[in-house]
Image (cartoon, rainbow, N blue to C red; front, side, top):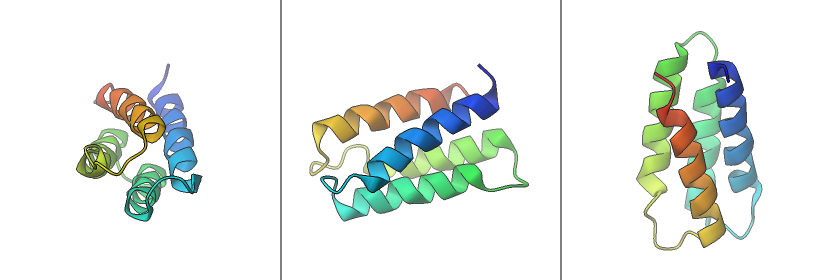
Amino acid sequence: MSFEEKIKQVVEIVTRISDDTTVPRNIRRKAAEAKSILLKEGEDLAVRAASARMTLEEVSEDPNMPIHARTQLWGALSVLETIK
């Protein structure tokens, strides 16, 4: 799988999280922020992936996050870790 395909996959995951009204607003906001980082043109893919990963890691341990969203977030983080 190419880096662009991995980025698309992560964008889909964070879009689902940011659109899910059962997820607290602060987590949806961070997911939307990670999405905008990933879609930013003109920056290296590895830099975008690292920035998005840091943004998502900030909220990954939030105790208010529903289990289904946490699982999706971990999946996105796993994909982002493969982009170097």
